[in-house]
Length: 272
Length: 272
Image (cartoon, rainbow over all chains, first blue to last red; front, side, top):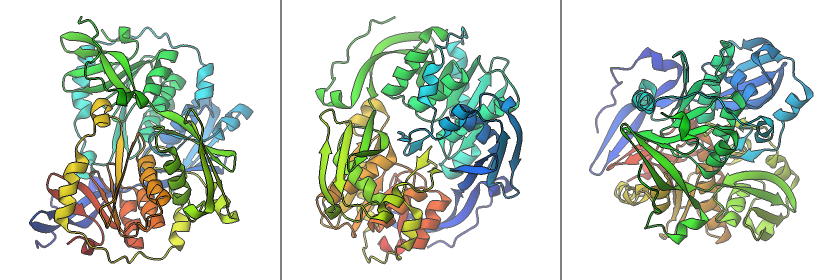
């Protein structure tokens, strides 16, 4: 059995999001003891006006963008202008938003729970509120070649994925080329974080593309509807409810974007 | 543009879980219109004594096993013997369990919500209840060679995965070789379904291995603790909280099981 060796290319950058642990690699005829990087998820508490309403298992980074994206996705707030302050605790495990919340906003926070396809309960886009939004007609068009080019970069494993094999990735690309990016153990979290970043920067995202590494189930489409994002691209599969929601709300849904090819499920007209 | 062709090897089997839709395959210099299989997730309502407590996005199959596995995983019931009847509605979208529920059982159903790494809220293993369980000392040992052999079969894409690229898989293998298997869009669902199947068959699973295609985060380990499953094997990554929970409760945690190799993170003594 080889003696465990601390990996030499250990980057201090990973300290925040990974732990290094000793594991046994078992082959058919050999066992090796070695160090390995393991993603460190944290239980982050979300508070609204000093009252805790949720704990989220996530990577403790961009917590302010995360809570803002979440509150917007769930239609608890209508705009970042409703927020008067955001505080993150010293240990990073508590984020408190001070904001004016309407009665409907509070109601949206405590809607009926549905266990979503990802695994568990959402609170993952308020479909009902979403349905009150009108059809998205944004006349934003993008060249297929551009998406195919960008997806090659997007699908490349990041350092964090290389080290842990355990993160989802999202990018929001605006018309002027601005990119907001995020990695998280949860695909919903990664998306809420890029949306929150753009909201905190007060950017208009009605002409943008959302890239995600995760599956496009209905909740993802609902997030796009809530934020008026006309095009969403994933390297993974789409679900039937995802297609139905995209059809109903005018979202261009692109899946299996990889290896010089992409599948367009709805409103292919936006892809030139 | 090629005229859409209904795929000829379309199996009627898929009708229950897939829809066939027309999509555009966009290549760098070509667009093809074609049929594709899309997974059909359904919103299944879970009822306890005729009262709805949850909706679950899932594949509408093995709904009885699913609700039983869920209620056991969440410590709402202690045993399948607590159940007097299970009814599935004609359309398959409602499952009602009639059962004696203790006060603690009801309390466990409405514990504090945590958005888990998968994406959203759990209700994904009651860690607190779990911590009251004692350390799992089951002296069950398995040959590494056997796991490596089985994982080759387990990791092969199923017909449903081949068609849709959108399902997780779980298998529970008992000491006598009995296999319970399940596929679902959610990794939690797939696990609850195999556990529910074994419970409905009144099998002892204290000497068993749980195989899963999904990541091993804490909630998965908690499920193993709740059901006294000593070994859990995944082809995917593990998280740090997953390792911590496995250490604390005596679960053998195996990740990245693929290509003639597996990583053992805790209690390697059970792997010969």
